[in-house]
Image 1 (cartoon, rainbow, N blue to C red):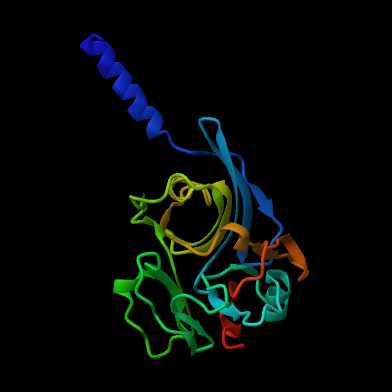
Image 2 (tube, rainbow, N blue to C red; image 1 turned 90 degrees about the vertical axis):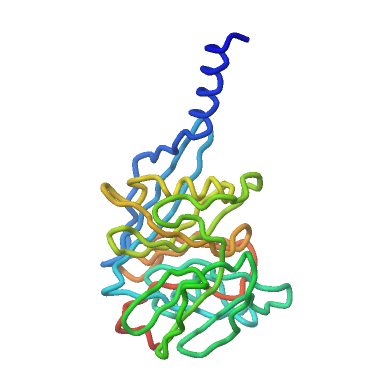
Length: 259
């Protein structure tokens, strides 16, 4: 093979491997005031995936853990009882329903922090802020009201995290933060972890001129579920989980965080 032809072939392969996902037109979901709901398809080289997301300001809203130790609740029933504006399934758990990693609900620790490669980060809340951090960055505040440890990190500094699995396709659940300071919950249908990270790092996925800067993977697969409240209190959209899960992560008004 001639050198020039070989170079062009290598360049073509590189460009194909780095091709970006392209967001399609988004459909606004009729969500409760203050929370922005969106459904959007994304595509790349014959592959497509669909995302549902809810974005909110941490100045007005916060996150809360909803526990489900006996499997009495579904995502929808737990979200409605809690008065959530949006909710997804939460962290990992053992077959006997024991949680993996740190779980804090209403200031009470339900399970301690664990050291494991998978459990690389956590989302947490205090009465005044929400944090999305790596485990080694976490300095436990005295006023910790909610926390959920999970992983792996998918996006950090606006870039995809290297080394993510690129083979197993499944539903994914994610908590993220934007460069605007907003936080969000997202589910992605039919993608690998590496593809999910690439989708999340796509500029404008959550809105024109916005970019996701950090994203943490929660439990996925058959655990994945998404619930969004409409203006009248009923569900604007409800995508149920496929099996009983141990806990959920909800968006609630900051004034109701202690409930």
